[in-house]
Image (cartoon, rainbow, N blue to C red; front, side, top):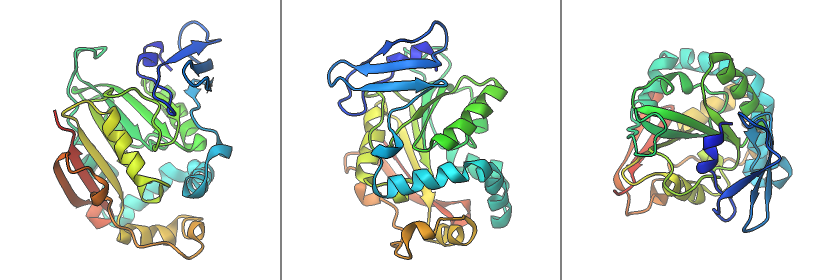
Length: 277
């Protein structure tokens, strides 16, 4: 983790700033982050700050963190197979979502060439090739609830030499300060968050005014396909999965340009809106 990332971080419980303890010089590979307000400590392990522990998770968050930990070894291959199955290239599908981001450079951008982008549920980093070299993107940050996925993502970004900072955390309690990002998006997962409303409110909180926010996840068509092909997906619901409905009603009425549309040939929906300037 880069040291300047500390300026963006906040306690996920109370949103107070964090201070570094026991860290080493250079990139932050270890140590702990402390909230002086609520006295919570968050360890940094192998460059990844841990803002949630597996034993703290409950309900669907716990089930799916475990499932994606186990499935992390084959996620990248599964993604390629899935796109082939629905009849489109992976690049076309991923750009169908990521190209809709409109990150705008801020006075505080480290390079001055673009804005900061946050991907929630980054997984093994399958969207990163369509973000890191964009001229309107200065920095990319990723958060996931699955440590297994993040470890694969960390190996990937280090192999590529990309300066992407990763965080283990819950999308319902983001460890970032208010108005930190010019681009915020999420692909896959919110359908089965414990608290979708909290997750959407958090995306809005950490976005700068004027930011377009994108939320994409499996449609009912996609979920039925996943039940056939993803080990453990159907079993996670014990045969009691509710029909999927995109969370349009959870987007505050104050948001602008709210729009719902299909992507990936109807296997996913995409919900987008803009935070008022």
